[in-house]
Length: 550
Image (cartoon, rainbow, N blue to C red; front, side, top):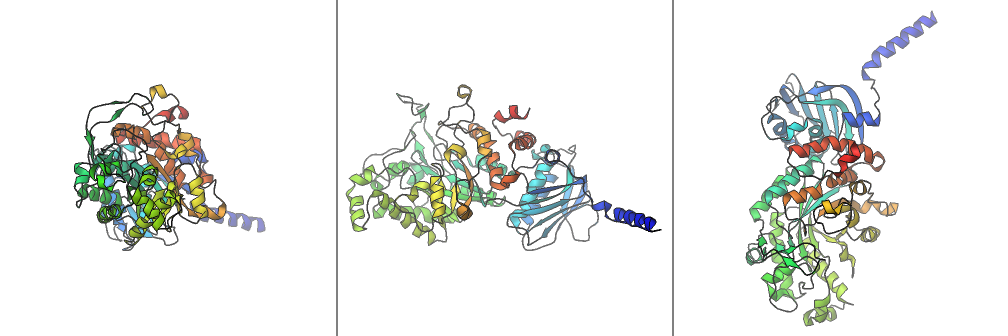
């Protein structure tokens, strides 16, 4: 009798709990079914699929956070195919639904995504998390959805499952250098779309340099009338002499309205646009416009050659008034929390010869020209802080003393980042031997487009750990990692994309995925599926990785 009762009890338990039992899949099978980049923190397999067909109700169960941007993106993305109609609907609407709701236990930018055959539930504690859940759904939908054309024949479905996710770092960045070569606003928006797809959230626009000034400043219109144009450009590599030039003028700039459009476009995709206005070096386009801001007034021209230039901004009062004028207009365009002020590669030759700069060193009780640069940066930081913003500078701003509230972007390796973290300053890691996307990505240089030099293959990018060199107690000061596309030798959008992808996608996973979840071979398999989205988006990416996946 006892045996019979025991068997009945076991049977009852199995029947009761069987529906919740999950089949365990290997990591390889999980990645095949859910080829998401960056790889999520946790994925749990469930049987079945959610099929996008007919009318599907979109239900938003909260007013705050406001999930409208995320929901609108999903509605627009799916409805344009013609294969399905997503519409906002009340809570009691019948049939299949996609529900947005709040869970305050989820970390900022994180999300929980529960997909069953009848309902998709997106939980997050903020708007960004809901948007990133939508990007995960986007990666699970057919790649043909990327085309902004009507195609009712697309079979739209996503696999059932539970995905719990959150980013490893808060600053997941990409920098576009528009100073050397000007890239139109449409190119920038296209890159924003790809950044959003891969959960990157900071776009730095390098807007001024020796070779061009790219931002309209209405109080100083000569900056774009003169400083935005150079008469010609170097042909070939700078190290090859004698130098030859193409004889063709090059230039362009973004109007303030164009930049506001870019900022809005990025904001709708939860990307903050950070402007970079170089100072006190990399300023020859400024000096070509206003030679009176140099240490020695002379006839300057917008540079036609790359490299570090000795002509820099003088530390006279007129320079600070000029920069404050410029930044006041920059503040009105960019609502970002940060302004990047450069601070790199500023030779001190002119300051050593300049009576004004030498007098400033004495008057301010400074030791040398490095401390003068620290004074320059600190003074600009004070002005920027007074407008509710913070500064980011390249790691040279450590020289002569670090400005009180500065964030350091470590590019000459990791030493600057380590030092700044130990000083308890925020750090963004972007060492050139890992994060410079203008470096060669193949050793077969004869068949590669001309690059500045160096070698940064995809696997080196992917395997980077930005906190490996930092003591545990200071790792919390690392905000994240940024990929930088310098464009001295990149004159077209196609070439720029070739250098950027898929290396920037690897950096996206460095920034997002826990280090113990990362596996390069697994990444390549997921990449081989997701890269097809770039095909649909007409992105000219490099294909070196493909041989590794065969």
